[in-house]
Length: 417
Image (cartoon, rainbow, N blue to C red; front, side, top):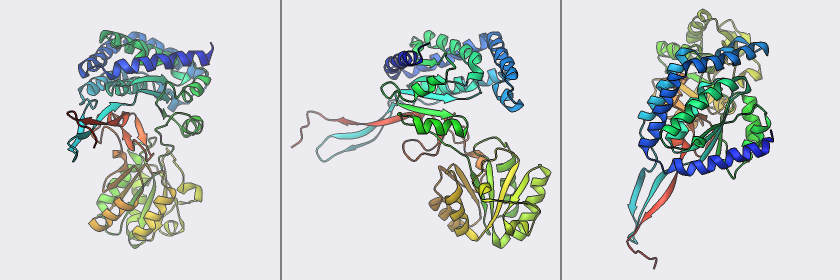
């Protein structure tokens, strides 16, 4: 296959389809989503067979148990994909919404209208259910999309793609509105991220290595986050029971997610009282603690190095540091945080407000677990990923994050004097 020619054709088709999707009605796009859900339900056997091929190939290639688990497409996960499509169909449509209309002294009215981005390229690994999640959000927000899943899930993704194509056709939309790249050649990724003529934005979902490569090589804007180095700071004005509950949840609810706490910061004033309670709770969960010198003087922990403050463990390992009050916590976070999610536990409103103002992350929390940094939990219905960028979308990226705005002007024969 001539990869460059193939990807150019995919890009041209996506650009043409984007125009048709953008002008389609909410009812048509919802019909496509619901028809895709119906197609997935009818194709359970086909999906299971395709996924079996991927799992067999994965075992032959030595994929570890965690990767095989992410790759699996169980009946329950198919149910979740179907329910996800129905939920996205029920979400309010952001496209065409006009806001901020104001009269100017000249007599014209000026406002902003929400519009699709155009063509969104999404590059992801392992989990075939991402194919449905990404396609549904892009379609609902009036965009065409090009999906490039991991080579390990090629059969599953193509089976899902056939269901999506059927759903689009049922709604009268072009099947090229959602295209799943058919080749596992990595050169396809290189082409996709360097086609600004056809692709408006790239969203990478995967490991740090994948995202770094795309960010460095792309000639198309990228919505991304590299790490999830999230912090919980326990202030001297914290409620101890609340602090313990939040910290344990932030670390142990799930270890392998980007919004899991990786570093616990404790105010020096209360360290001797709160750290033994924390250590006992984390020991019950099997979490290994790595602490600074002050931490290890109070509890049993391995010595933390500079690398531990920068680490996204994605494992039952937690870095712990005793800091000099709020100033020390903010200084540490702004130095080591990946600007994903950081939380303060305190009953002091003034300190909480200062934390909100001075911590420069995409989500900043008061008395809440970092695990809430999620599109569904934020009321977005679903998310395409998390962005730690400061331009366009920041934090969980839902339907609105896949759109832009343009100015609209209403007049009645007005001319500029």
